Length: 190
Image (cartoon, rainbow, N blue to C red):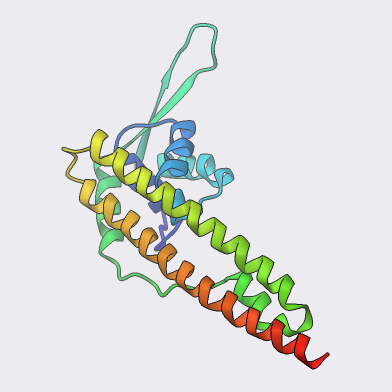
């Protein structure tokens, strides 16, 4: 089975290396962990698990529940762990930037500075909330997972988010000041 860098199968193998999980468990874990920096379509999880099982990289066990739907638990196989290790050694591909805010600002002269200001303010509020989430998540991880050898790596990803959001907030403040200057120049001309 072909597993390219950064693909859904590799993300699933990584998550299943933590513990056996159902597709629902994986969805929940994504929202609490890698979802802060890796967007994974929920519609890709179940087909991805099926492909991994067919390739022998994960095993599927069905738990029968009385009066409830069956629960399908997936666990990574030794071959799956080897595939994950292989993928982790592959050099990281360059990031491809796609930032709608920057695209809109690039063409921002076609609308008022106040419209651009609203976009920047919304981005600023998002990153202020993100900083709170990163801090709360790090605190909870330190409490719940203090002895887990993976904790330092999880905290590294949160620190990246914290530094990234901090840099974006600084940029937002600078950009708002520039937009204010543009707006005041426009008012003086009228």
